[in-house]
Image (cartoon, rainbow, N blue to C red; front, side):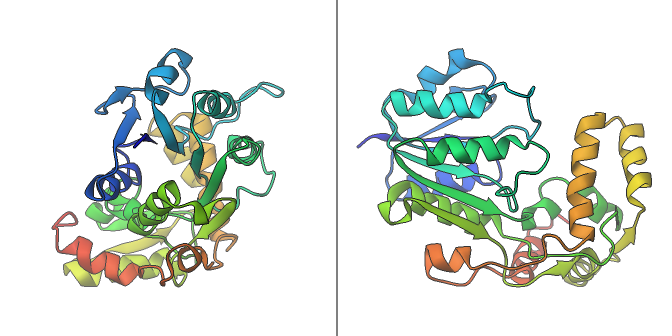
Length: 279
């Protein structure tokens, strides 16, 4: 039985995929810059061959979304080529909702194309915002402070549970029926950030509010707080897309992949509140 490689194996989706695969008895190798089975850096090709040795399937995660110089091949594209040459016969790419549109030269476009043109079994996952962003990363400080100050207005997002992404990815890594499929992964209904704040507040017995911020003011605040300008502009643009309801549509990707409805945001809130991470 050949090894399944999980890039970003300690991340939000990666560690959940690893748990599922190991519970199923699958041999798994995690690869990332730290705390993994093998050191890996997409920008350091010398780390690629050790990570790919004996691997038959791989889960690909890009460490950032910054486009490189025009005309320069992206590291993700070169990695796909090397992975196939090393014997990988199944690729599952974590992309993002809306990445099928050629906007702003996103390297996700090149990565998706490389996977589709690889000549091996492939699956592309395009999730919307993760529910776990409220408990594990970007939005947790605001929840703990009682105020989500974000330039999202009344825009809606069908937040997707990372557990649903992980289950879909684990299935795609081990079952050929997902080959050649692109799954748009969303939750069952779209919510505003104000509704999210209300749900978390009720579940925790705390006051949590959403405060709408002008997009330009938000960008200036992020840069003033030390966020690199390029990263701040990119994140602000993603939030602006939410403000404009560009990511409000729900999709049937989870149902197509797993034969069931996606987990609701309410269920995520109930389970997460019980862990005490918001208190």
